[in-house]
Length: 90
Image 1: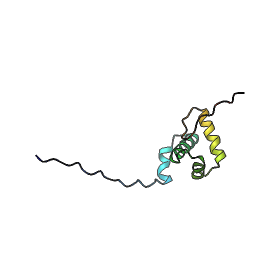
Image 2: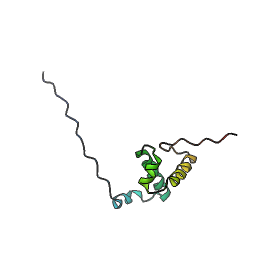
Image 3: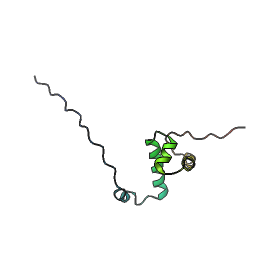
Image 4: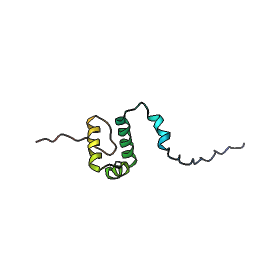
């Protein structure tokens, strides 16, 4: 009896990044705030939660990014690399 060997896994090349004019049609209908939030969250995920690196990639200050993360946490969103702040107890 002949045994059939499995086909080797194909290695697909990484997709080239889309140009902004190719992305914009998918964004129509979303608010700027929604798009910004998704961009921030996905960048943080790609940077493994490293705020300094994510801020550099996004072109914003670490303070601005921290403020956005604080707001997203307050809104109940799951932010990569972030723990929701707990209220201080005196």
